[in-house]
Length: 391
Image 1 (spheres, rainbow, N blue to C red):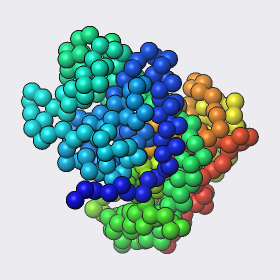
Image 2: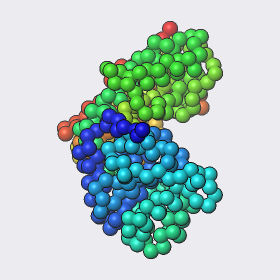
Image 3: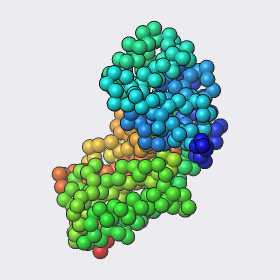
Image 4: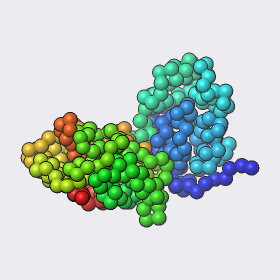
């Protein structure tokens, strides 16, 4: 018996479009083969979302081949056959003898593939930033006649501008995000364990919204309740919610690897004057930031519109205002911060992340995922922009 092809997240033509853009970039860099090892970039180019990147694997994009070749652990090869658009012959499973082996690993299989393809003496691109120094040296040592080129983020920058098909999937993810926020408002109550509330929220992230379930793994979710609201990335605790608790929640629905982040602040009881004033300042700043989003504006323009407004209200945010957003949550390219002159273009998507952690025991969160349109902005997430005052 052989595994069948599963339903594809996108048509083959969409992956061909993405690969054509990558090959064009490869031509500019004068490389004949690109080894893609970043899991999110592999998802982008193939549709593969299984969790196998904890061991070496590589997607070989060659100028001479229509389809890429995916070299990964043999036991994960059926998942690649099932999930990707590629022919079975383009998926190569390497043997278990390369797992836990101090002398050889999966990158040796990738290098063997390059040699078989005739690329051992040509220009080869590697995503060096995400690769260990030992792995990078292995490529150089075993391919002494090749010209190794650092192509870190080459694919990621291409991902920055989404297709209309990708935007449709991100809208689906955003609907799941909104549903999870509203579920949080239902289950956060005095006496409820934080873990039990998280279980309900995660259930919504998996069940999805509008008939579209959450797919892939549940992404990063942070619940920071009093007295831990001054930290952004801590997880839920063994504690229960109490009267007077503040809860800062960040989550994101996920569809086919694409996510849409959202953050909201919850109160059990009435907010302090300081928190209410900060919320009003952040709402005004968020609207100002969204107001300057249009093609031709820069990431710096968006951030500074926010900074100016909250400073008029007597507050300051030290951290950036957001980042490029899509597959795998963070796209490590453009940032919404002062000085980032990346020009906004239609179908770029960002997480406008306005969390503000001011003291060790005091912080506040608010965010939206947005898309740059041909003339302005489309906010993909739509849960109410309010302090959720619960009882």
